[in-house]
Image 1 (cartoon, one colour):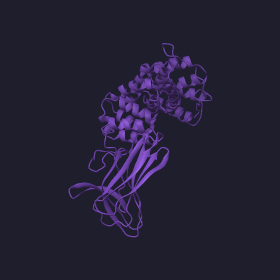
Image 2 (spheres, helix red, strand yellow; image 1 turned 135 degrees about the vertical axis):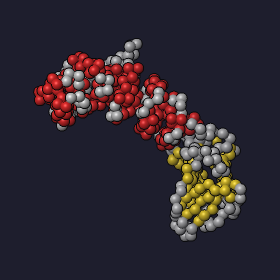
Image 3 (cartoon, rainbow, N blue to C red; image 1 turned 30 degrees about the horizontal axis):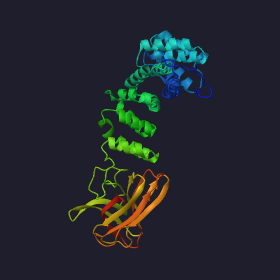
Image 4 (cartoon, rainbow, N blue to C red; image 1 turned 90 degrees about the vertical axis):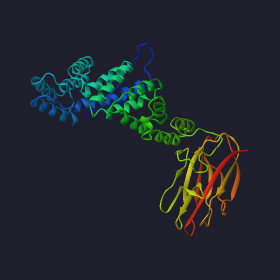
Length: 397
């Protein structure tokens, strides 16, 4: 099938109705929809009378294998289909594609609009109308046609979801897209999942902030996905804001959230992320009536068993930890505090060997360290190890 590239396409620049240039989200939509409309137009299958469908199937298959839509053989098949049934959007769309290839956009536009009058369920026509609305800077028309495509075609998400996700990159389009998503539909949850996985994480966060019914997002923990992606992208402040908006704990006097391991609602990365494997791991347990972090490791096993992200402001601090009831520990586990970006070790602190004993270490946070990883690492030993941590805290000095 013939393809359209940015190098070969030279669409005439449009302006919004008030005279301003089209916003970047509109430009992204145009690029995403252009190829989708051509593909859908070439692959749509007629559902009318049998003989007409056979002719259109033949035409479609040839276009899929690279024959131009304006090839005489293709157009002969299209005319054959139209002689049997004049109300077939597929035939009109293939004719419109041929007109576009010949450089007759106005003739193609008339055919697409005629197809729209015949049926509102044809995906290729709907995508052309989306592209046309994008070109005119018509946000309302663009979204209306996208919504109709998603309601009437199971194939639409493959084309419309990426375009909607790109639209989120423009701040002016976030609220209109959020309003569209909040309307009851069969596709909105699938789009939220798509946005969480594929949209720019800051754009996905903007959408999640704008959606009023946050249960749509939190029930599948989509906010968690985006928080983790933001952290991976180094956008720590925005990640913290999104975490707080969806039920996370705000920054408070206790600089290590869940430092005594009894807050099961504190979620990673602003709560503990625990390694849980048979040979190495950590888990919350109750010991002598108190919640502790119990760790274990088999022979020669070692590694990180717990970690969470802190956002300590610049200043001087003390890291303190208290051991639980130690059982079998040859080499005490080690707390490490490291700058998240750039990745730099700040301080280390070994867990005391004696039951319930405390140890402390001083450190400083510099202005170029906006977030820090606090992690507990079990060091390998020649015998199995097990023990617990009763508490870990950070205090300003």
